[in-house]
Image 1: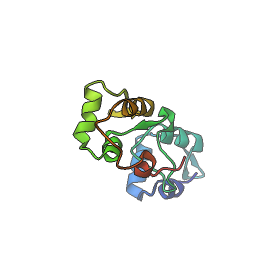
Image 2 (image 1 turned 180 degrees about the vertical axis):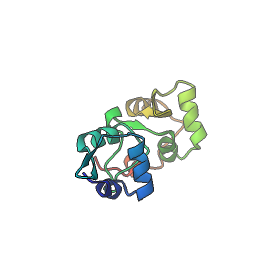
Image 3 (image 1 turned 30 degrees about the horizontal axis):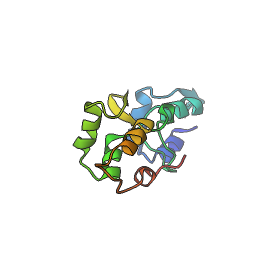
Image 4 (image 1 turned 90 degrees about the vertical axis):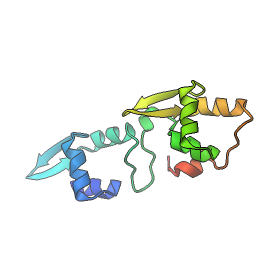
Length: 133
């Protein structure tokens, strides 16, 4: 795909797109003097990160299954993000590290939520994340 295609898919400007390309986030090729992005390597990169989101709303980070950010948990429960971080710090919910940030395992969150009575959901996860699978 072309660089403008990447810009359109991610909703980024020219500078941000070329920054991603220069960081070698995905494979690129020069074809007749024009830079092309390898579609498979782009999709592989997209499924392994959470920072960038496609304009069409497709969920990033699919490589890591169903995980939640502490901010998502905070919004779902109507609590401060620091309290969501405490759930991980205290070992109450399981998490993984992705690009230096913690992601709460959805299965662990659901299991914990079902076993406690202190917190109630003020929003559903899907409502907060707003992704299309």
